Length: 168
Image (cartoon, rainbow, N blue to C red; front, side, top):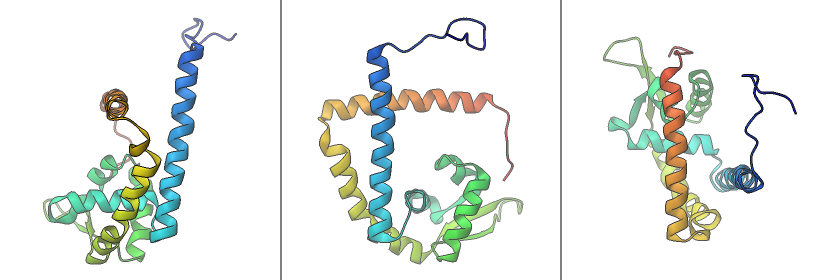
């Protein structure tokens, strides 16, 4: 087998580790596909749209700086800009200059965006229950949360040590 970047043999996954990894990748992709399908079919929203609407609805004044919103939905700033542009055309959000410094841009949830979020939430929660929560015991749910908290912490740490990429 080929050596890794450091010239040493990679630490290959054991059969049990590989089974867990593949179950996670397949299950998470299928889960996201089902959640996206439900939102598209019932509400004409993508999962990405829904996440943005949720983040903005929870923010003070229903508004966030674009850079903070990108971080909150785990998106690049350029990808978020395109997404927000599409959502603006649907009157779900609006952009404005930050009053604080004039350089930043705010994304704000509109009344129409809030109305669409409220209409979408019951069906989305039902799908989350059907395809995820209700399949697991409380102990399994806690274990999934604990495991993914560790993944998120490790990824956050790596992001903090990386140089900043695309400006707002």
